[in-house]
Image (cartoon, rainbow, N blue to C red; front, side, top):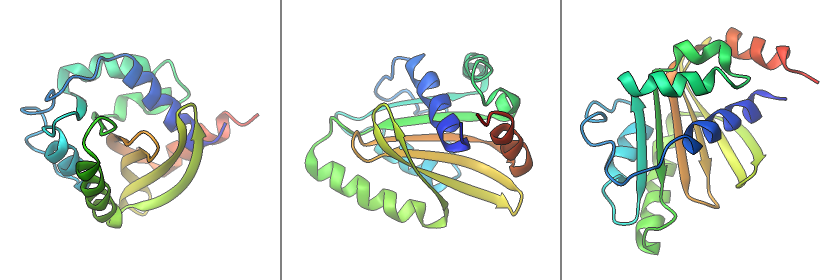
Length: 167
């Protein structure tokens, strides 16, 4: 199984473990620092949007779920999980969101597409340095679902995970 599929599986497991409530991110995300975090915070209050963030104490549960996936080796390095679902917002809001998302992703490295159970998703990496990923971003344009997984992820560890789970 390749790294993109593992990342997608991880996020699906984490998201499935929570009921995504409107406005759940307000206080905890007030220190959003990446372009995607800022975008999630900005759109979390839009009517029909659903959002969730796991940070601090909530990461205990999220990490336990991560440890049950092929990404277990980096579970301790995950600092934050954020999800924004824009499928139930007005068409005008969705179009503006997609435009803003496109702008926010300009500083990210496109990693490719992967088929998931909910459709084709795009995977992006925010590099802290040549060998360190600071944020994994997965976007499903069919369901308008944006997922961010933040932490210091050494590329060598991600590659070891990928190599260790080859068929």
